[in-house]
Length: 255
Image (cartoon, rainbow, N blue to C red; front, side, top):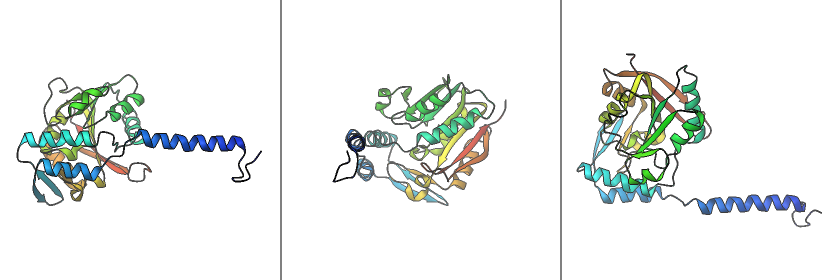
């Protein structure tokens, strides 16, 4: 029998109530992230000097200890935030699989909760893919290690079929970070860097200290990785409904 008030049957009412309850429970389970508060906290923890160039902005910290503390506290403040979407990672995984190369090992830098490598693993069956984050919280999540992505890791040198990041805007020294990443690639391996509106110079702040236009990012990558590889293409994902971006692809030179 239909309800006189809603015009819905009892079964439809049950489904509607269930969906409404599910949405409420989902919202209750997922704490809200105060992004503005995280930036304010970063500004309080460490005042930065702002250096501006053509198409780029870099926030400079007083010392490395300040940078690390800002990033660790920012990670904890935004721990429940997820910027990149599963659909985007699936797209990249399919793109990698369609390249004709077998993906055995990959790295994802600046992953917070480790969703990225989990999604890559789901799509690239059998591949070992690990994520890194500078915060001690990294060890709480599967296949995630605590690591400053600026640093070389001899265990990863020349092993990776791909290195992915949408967190390069957290670099205090982008050149150092990019050079460390390209060293991890096998000959022919690729570095995949998302570029979104959130990576532009105007979006940089004390917590996300580096911002650059796409042309400047490409130039910086080619300069930082000279002798190892160069940018070969840009994947245009600006029409993607969930996550609009362009992906800069740098390929390591053949052996």
